[in-house]
Structures are given as structure tokens and as C-alpha cells.
Length: 387
Image (cartoon, rainbow, N blue to C red; front, top):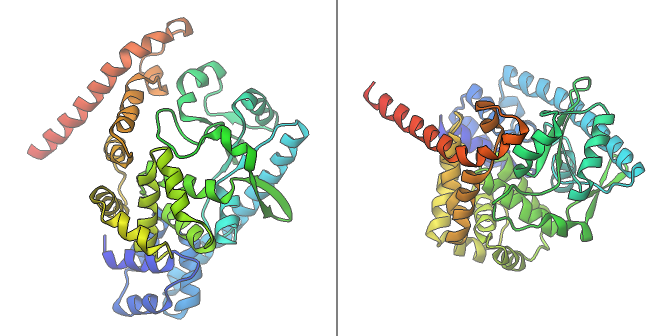
């Protein structure tokens, strides 16, 4: 993959595009098909379109213009549909006296980008208190949504470690991720879900106030979420960079101290380094320099940058192993490993379906299944090297 196309994408993937650099890169010559493929892969097509239109639209081939405009029309239509569904569900939950909040998708786009159509999205994410989870599931079911795994006991046994369940409405095509936790089991995360409810913020969406995370909580969440996912997609860096641009009054020293209390300072420092170095976000120079002097954070940033240049899927095991070094302390790097070895998943059940009375056996069989899976991956890699 050409680095020049990615460099142009970096200049465009921001609300304040680097017009001069965009024009210079286009003048040098761009593989437009590669650029579009990169933008689609990284989920930043709306910003690419906006930046090219403001910088050098006449230099863009008509075929590329048509592709971006066609995408944008369908994107706006879907965004408005998702926003309407969110407002509808918010009303339904209020009528049933269940407090909910949302922290991704259209609300994040409105809060950070100032335009809900400037960020790609695919579904709705709402969070409820854990005690309200059964009623929230019933409400979604009554509204035409069905869980990916319909059996509630099965969900609880094999999916609850994720802190969320997926629900889909086949008639409307809408999807809702119902959260009761901001992070999965065994993750060192700078936010405790039960603590967000005392100080929720609000975002104006289509003339209505929608509850979401307060700014400080949102900053920590964006950094931790991107780090957990290995910063595979540029859109997550864009989210954090746009947050830094918009909320200049945030005390990042205080935020870093807060992250350190939860042993998650590396995620915040990594997010700041990536946002600053890739997208020129105005993060404090002192904090950026200090983070870059840390060899572990520097290595993580370089690895994330290299990962973004690839469009082929990376093995989950490799991403998991790489993510262990994002934790501040050794014992927090061991938690995810212990969780991986001791947590039953849908994969365990699908490989060996057992009646509910025997589900406890999966705690015994899971480590052996993982060892066998790892051995298979090693064998395949070894075999390919001699093929």
C-alpha cells in the first residue's frame, strides 16, 4: 500500500484539513482507487469528501467524485435514520422509567465533530445500569429487536464477559449494542460504569437533549477504547483528535493523573501521541514529548501506525498479545491472560454443545481448546514457511 495515499488521507481526515499539503500530494500523483479503499477501510469517507471539496475538488477524477458523492448520500440517509431511532428509543425507555445514555455514533459525531454526518457509523450504542438490563432487553424485544443469541441464559453464560449484547431489527435493519459496562471483563479501564451516572452530560441532537458521557469521561473512554482495539482504524484516532481540537480547556495533566489511578495512563498517552503526530491535534507539547520519550509508548505508536497502513485483517491473537503492553503494570497485563483462559465463550459452546447442567465443564475444557488453537496457528505458519 502506497504511503502517499495514506499521507493524503491523514491530511484530509480532520475537520480542519491541511489544504496546502493536500494540493501538493495531489500534484505529485495519487492512486485514487487506493485512496478510496483506504478511506473505506478506515471509516473516514465523509471527512475525505469534505476535505477534498474544500481543498482541490477540481483535481479529483470524476469517477472518484461520483463514488464519494454516492456514498455520502446514502450515509446521510442512514445517519438520519439512526438518529431518529435513537430519539424514539430514548422516549420509550423514559416512558418505562429506565435511564439510558449513549456514547458513540451520532451523539459522538455531534459532540466532537459538530456534525453528525461527518463520522461514519453502523449502529446504536446505549448503556443502562446493570440492574436494569433484563427490563432493557424486554423493551428492545417489544420494539422489534432480537438478540443475536436469543436464549437469555446462553447470553448470560457465554457473552456477559463483553459487557454488552447485540440486538438487531430485521425489518428496519437497525442494530443496537446494549451495554451495561464500558469495558469487558479483565480489562484495565480508566472508567467505572457505575460512576458515570452521577454526572452525565448532554448533547443537542435534532432539537432534543440526549444523555451522554461528560467531557472528561469521554476523553478517557475514547483513548481506552482505541487502545483496546489496537488503533487499527484511523477513525478512532480522528475521534480523539477532534475531541482535543474542540475542547481546548481540558486539563490533560489532571486527566493523566486520573488515568494513572486506574493504571491506564499508557492508553491516554498513546492516544495523545497518535492524535498529535498523525493528525496535528493541538495536544500539550510537554505531555507529547514526555510520552514520546517513553520507549514502550513510542513502540506502541509506531506499531499502531504500521497497522493502519495494512488493509488485510490482523489475527486476533496477535492484536491481543500486542495489547498486553498497553497496561501500566505487569499484573494488569496478566489479567487479560487469566480472563482469556477462564472465561467461557460462544466458541466453546459451538465446538461442544452441552446441556445447561453441564456448562461448568467449559471452565475445564477451555484452556485445552485455546492451546490447541494456538498450536494450529503455529503449525500453519510453520507449514507456510516451507510451502
